[in-house]
Length: 71
Image (cartoon, rainbow, N blue to C red; front, side, top):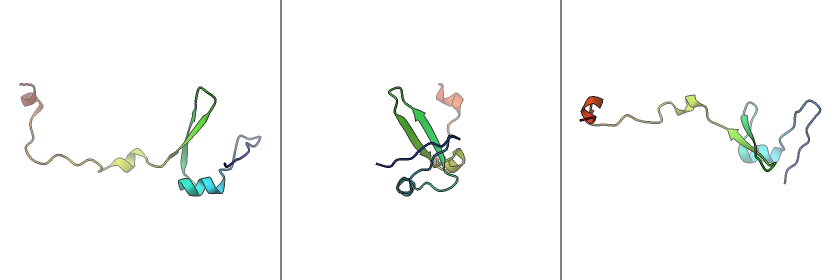
């Protein structure tokens, strides 16, 4: 189990083994969630909305107008 300490300015260091296991590098964004039972959940935010560009391809074949779908 990895452990770190919070400084007086609210900063902490992520242990090296955790950084390696999650591919955290300088500039990586983290998303923090405080759960109702007192646990803390931290997620690595590795994708931005811009990374999704081009992910979905338009359908091939016949295109149907919306007014024709309502018929």
